[in-house]
Structures are given as structure tokens and as C-alpha cells.
Length: 79
Image 1 (cartoon, helix red, strand yellow):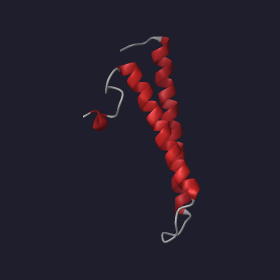
Image 2 (tube, rainbow, N blue to C red):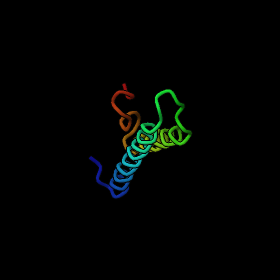
Image 3 (cartoon, one colour):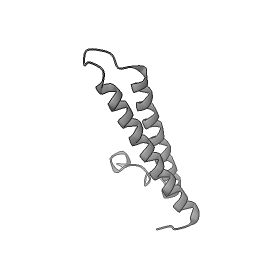
């Protein structure tokens, strides 16, 4: 396991990115829950979901840079 300062900082950054993504998912869920099932979701729900997707994508790319090919991606995506 690499314990260089850069790797440690990247791991901490990835944790924060995943935490922010979870917060965006929770915000989307709360907003969507207030809308009747027959009504369209407000644009903010889609924005929160897209923000979460983007944050996770950034975290996965950062992990991949530290880990080498495919090792930084979730197991189901790595094959």
C-alpha cells in the first residue's frame, strides 16, 4: 500500500467526493419525495442526481490515477 502524502491526500479527497455525492443523492431523494408520483420531478432533482454522478466520476478517475488501470474503479465496473 502506497502511503506517500499525495496518495493519502488523494484518498481523503476521494472520501470527500463520495460524501458529497451521497449528500447530493439525499437532496435529490428529499426533493423527489415531496412531488406526487404523477407529477414530473423538478429540474433540481435531476441537477442533484447529475452532480452526484459527476462527483463519483471524478473520485473514480482520481482513484484510477493512483491505482493504475481498472484498480480504482468499482469492482462491478472493473470486470
